[in-house]
Image (cartoon, rainbow, N blue to C red; front, side, top):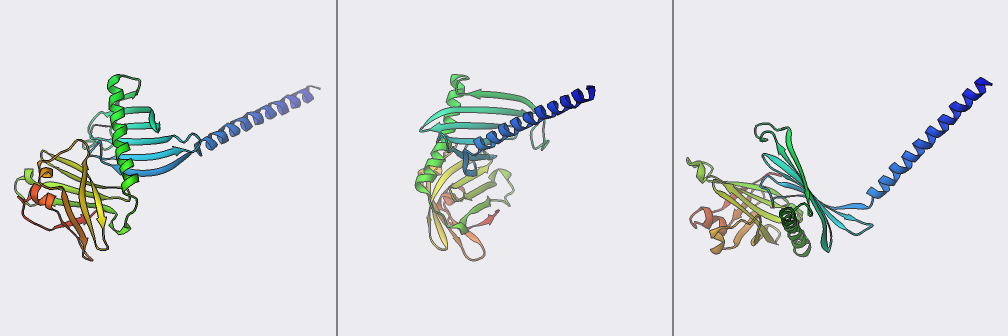
Length: 266
């Protein structure tokens, strides 16, 4: 009799354990189904809020039709992650900021000393800052959606140019980066007391692409924009990418017409 009771209890425990496992499996499966509601629309790198770059994803919730922007903004002393949910208007915005114990140029894998969370309700300052960052993304993606619908794949890539790279005075050396993606074209200039970041528009032909200034990003400006907004023509001669750019001539070469050979990074 005792053996029978023992066997019965073991069978009952085994049955209950299986029921728990089944329940967890169903919950897990329900979680997967929920995740299936999120469809990735875009995954790209921008340089709007940080010269170090920001990884941005755009998703859509196919159930609620809400759009979601998730981004990770990188910096030398920390990073921030953002998530914005919107549907015609901004519904929710949140940010987590991490501060490193030391800059990444000292330690490529630093410890995190500070972690701060905030959202639209944290404070008026937080609400304004998050809304401004959200609007900066929205402007880019709306522009891309309405104005930059097609692209010639052979031009896609990241290009670089160093102005005055052999100059003895390092303060006269400037880095120019041209990023041509299927969604946008950006111009970034960095150097001593120099930071210019612009959105450009293309007019494409078979062997050339003409570039025009559209707007400044990151609140950057330049006196040279008052002289010209013509970013010239980029051609491919079969071996090299050659850029004739009136804006660069005025800004960095005292107006002398030059041809610049770009290095295609990727």
